[in-house]
Image (cartoon, rainbow, N blue to C red; front, side, top):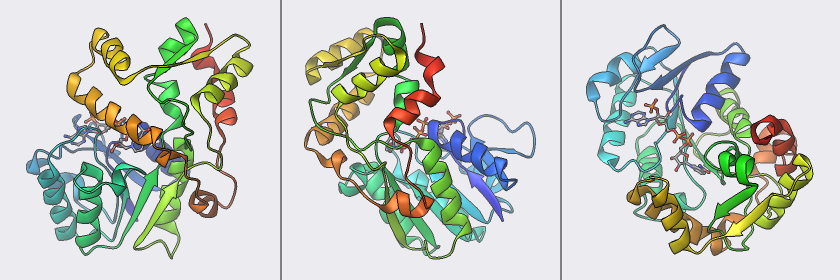
Length: 276
Ligand SMILES: NC(=O)c1ccc[n+]([C@@H]2O[C@H](COP(=O)([O-])OP(=O)(O)OC[C@H]3O[C@@H](n4cnc5c(N)ncnc54)[C@H](OP(=O)(O)O)[C@@H]3O)[C@@H](O)[C@H]2O)c1
């Protein structure tokens, strides 16, 4: 078994690559950077010329579509190439809400994966806990604030380290072909509770500031974020506010054979990131 991990510099791909390598599996990371050794493959979905080298000898594919990626045609061409290289299984990282919405990119790619004729598993993760250790980390560290337009709706988060284990299971165990799994922890909490967990763990106040979509937009534009990406965020937080991200599921616990990590445990594991 030789596994290609796309999006391997990203939040989930890097966790998957690290996890599979820690098990001694033959896993190759892929992204747009040039390959320096055999553990990396250069892959750009927009450049078919990169497909051949990246897919040579690959039996299992973990597919991540970059956030905001627009061209489903590129992904179809990559899937066609995977077919021609006789890939035996694709595990695709979709999204819980967008996977459900016809016309959204992740929904379109789900359909492409289902129709491509190769054995597949689709993973639909909730919001990543690690978002708080990345883009949201600075505000927590510097100001003790979490600025989001999430209202008081609950969210079932997921720790990407658990996603990595789920990916491993889809490749190593039988019975996951043709299945779609919701990957979330077994608790749904609102962002006031998220802030409380941070305050408790850090021993200083952390406040959730529930911004209106307009205020969130102005804050992020002021910080130099692109308007297009932000519009997508507002759309996603609208879905959060409808409560769709609060739905619990036993899929991840069943895949892992244990309870998925809870938010409090995630904060404890990454504490150094938010310490002043
Ligand atoms: N954030 C969440 O809470 C959440 C929740 C559910 C689902 N999702 C979904 O999860 C996926 C994103 O996962 P993530 O956060 O791990 O990704 P990410 O951190 O945004 O990383 C995206 C990856 O895609 C690679 N990439 C960018 N452009 C590429 C191209 N043209 N060809 C090939 N690779 C390219 C990047 O590598 P290089 O830049 O090195 O090339 C990077 O490794 C998205 O589909 C998102 O919608 C996110």
